[in-house]
Length: 65
Image 1 (tube, one colour):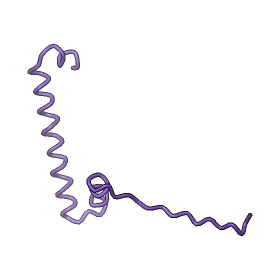
Image 2 (cartoon, helix red, strand yellow):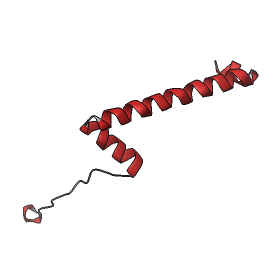
Image 3 (tube, one colour):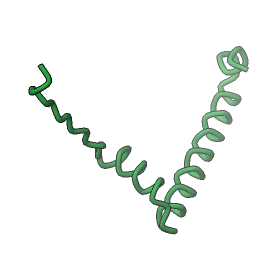
Image 4 (cartoon, one colour):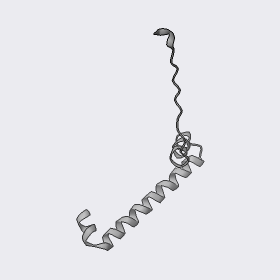
């Protein structure tokens, strides 16, 4: 497939267009899931689009040393 992409610009353009449509469809489905109340999708989109992260706190107890 990559060989044809280098040789034929129409093949390359068609593959890029298909990939773009697939990504748009995936984004649309993710938004639908988030709007439907999927906590997992809301968390994932927050991390991807808003830079949100899980915060991990360490409790270091020095009395054991």
